[in-house]
Amino acid sequence: MKTIIEPFRIKSVEPIRMTTPEERRDLLRAADYNLFKLHSDDVLIDLLTDSGTSAMSARQWSAMQSGDESYAGSPSFFRFEAAIRDLMDFKHIIPTHQGRAAEAILFSILGGKGKFIPSNTHFDTTRGNIENSGARADDLVIAEGKSPSLVHPFKGNMDLAKLEAYLEQHGDAVPCVMLTITNNAGGGQPVSLANIRATAALARRYGRPFIIDGCRFAENAWFIQQREEGQKGRAIKEIVRDCFADADGMTMSAKKDAFANIGGWLALNDDDLAEKARTRLIMTEGFPTYGGLAGRDLDAIAQGLSEIVDEDYLRYRIRTNEYITERLDAMGVPVVKPAGGHAVFVDARAWLPHIAPLQYPGQAVACALYELGGIRGCEIGTVMFGRAPDGTEAPASMDLVRLAMPRRVYTQSHADYIVEVFEELTAMKDSLRGYRITEEPPALRHFTAKFAPL
Image 1 (cartoon, rainbow, N blue to C red):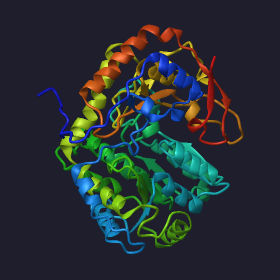
Image 2 (image 1 turned 60 degrees about the vertical axis):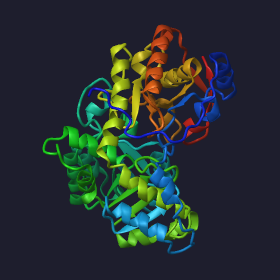
Image 3 (image 1 turned 45 degrees about the vertical axis):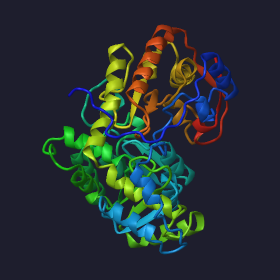
């Protein structure tokens, strides 16, 4: 069969409030042209993020009824811990309320002024937590990962030559080596198992801990199974275990590849580092067996981890993004190719060459999609990556618009509607204008900045 159907039935529905372009124009103006400021019930199809927006399964809802809310030693924690260890066998599992909390704890210990932390591409909160500590976050993705239209099976790979030179240059000032799977800010592109192992080996050779940001580990494992030599036919669960086998730790947002609406964890092998992390956790999140979460949340995550490695689900998940990407490519909309795991990425800079990068073409596309069709996406580019620590601003390497697909939420007709909105937008794209920022915070500006059209 050519049609990849949703491998689930819908048992509960939530109504969408239908709005008109005229209403959305006013709503956009009232939100200072920042899509994060819109009320979600004013959005028809919400593709702002795939984080925490999943539809939970009947078994997850059932598992929540078993949640034990004891302050310390809850059985919910031990089910949560066992579910993680079944996939990633780390010595210490430290729950947090979401992924950025795990990052904040980790970099409060490893970061600091004069430190340098490399990754293939740091995402926004990772970069924010590193820079907030006084350290510098650097991206060392392969050159192919910076070319949206280039087809390459693993555009998220770390550039190993650049990493080695980086480790030589900065020496002891590098407290760890990071790797994001999949590479969210680079178009949701995967990292090969060979590259994960080579990055780990390089970090080990220089005596540096190797930390994986594993938010979309199952999607990354699917790409490895489908694209990497020698991996075809292997179970997703086996591939996942191999991905983390050489890591010294990981940060995780369970709001992605664990089907949870909240939660995350920091996993570590080093006893000393884990002790410091738990001390910090108690001060900022909660006791080490709940870490800012309710027991029912821990149980929902544990069940979600058993569901995310299902191959029927992953096949459907990846195919949804491929379908939309192929349709947009056929109509001449420049997209990141091949399709990413969790989102469709539009190359706004290439699509709107009349808008300069510092006039934010990604923001122009994102605002137009909402006004025209009620679709909320997210700019991933010059706005998101923000100013350098010294206050200067330069164009990001790419200006993308991410349409992140919530897991198990939308159907084929929603996908077709997205394509139809792009068909209409294509006819008027040359009339779109850029934006200027009228007000911005010193860090993570894309969440709260105010914009005005030029």
